[in-house]
Length: 165
Image (cartoon, rainbow, N blue to C red; front, side, top):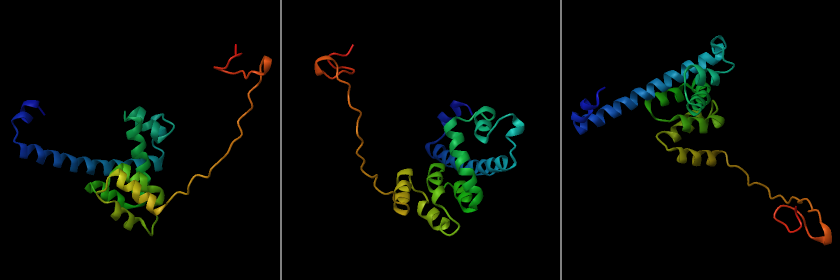
C-alpha cells in the first residue's frame, strides 16, 4: 500500500483498517500454530535439513528466535486445547499469555483458566498463574566462603588487597 493512500484516509477508516488487520493477524497466528504443530508431529522439519522445529522456523522461515520460540511453545498447547486455538484466532488471548498458562492447563481446568485469562495483559496472567500455582519461598542458605590465603606478615592476599602481586 502506498503511503499517500494512508495519508489521505480518514481517521475512522485508519482505525477500522487497524482493527481488521489485527483480526486477520490473530486468525493467521492461530492457523500457523496448527500447522507448526503438524510439522512437528510429522517431523517435516527434518526433510528441510534442519534438526528441530526451532531451527526450521529460524533458518528456513526466517523468524526471529523469540517469535519462533513463542509459536513453538504455544503450538502443542493449542493443538491439545482447541479452545485455546479459537481464542488466539479471536484475539481473546495472546501468545505470551497462553505460554504462561500452558504448564498449568489440564483437561479439567483449561476452560476456566482460559476464560479467566481472556483479554488480560501479560502481567495480569502472571498474577493469575501465581494465584493458581504459588511458588514457595526460596529457602535461606548460608554458604561458607573459602578462606583467603594469608601472605607475608599475615596480610590477606587477593585481588585489590595489599600484598597481592
